[in-house]
Length: 307
Image (cartoon, rainbow, N blue to C red; front, side, top):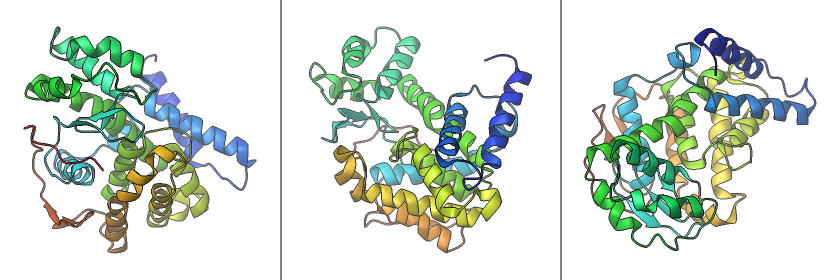
């Protein structure tokens, strides 16, 4: 991607594009295209120590947020590195701490990273079939994957591989997007991070890029233009509508069942807790959890259903 100075110039140009984006002043189609391209570049750009890096969460705060997302995903504060199951949601097998899937190909990426760390492991033999199954819901030929995944999850290197991919695919892109939008509060950064974990990044209406564009249009401006709280309300309201009426029919039932994760974020916003001040109590699906700022556990445990 070039040297550090070139990367900073590129980032600053895209940052300014997003910061001063005015839907009413640009032809709508051109505005949406430019905005989507800018966000897409931010999620794939190589990290550097500029403005985006400054938006990263502190270790203590990130630990709290990781627990909160785990509660939303698996109703547990402990990361579920060993989970693997077919949720019948059109994504094949869903596995690991971030819900990596065989259809989306991020599950394959985890296995490939682990294979480089520990060659000829219990999952190495699945790589050719996983490549074939990308883009499909089929799990044919992967019948032995669940048992092998659970066995691999007892290896610290495998949990490290999952953490690495989570950072590359979800956390770092979320912080870049939050930085480009000018979001400052922990709640806002948490909301973007949680959204990319569930929705992934893209420009369609079901994805983070589409939700950001729709929220900015609904709020009539970026966070810097209309205020962070107003924009965040539009973002969470838009995301809730997506969960209730997903464009992809294969995700509708599962996403509607997960509406509590957004309701809890809306509650925190309405209570004015943008700093995520303790005590943090969450009850997205009928069981209350209290979240404390502590290092996240890496111990694999039995897995409930992913939301």
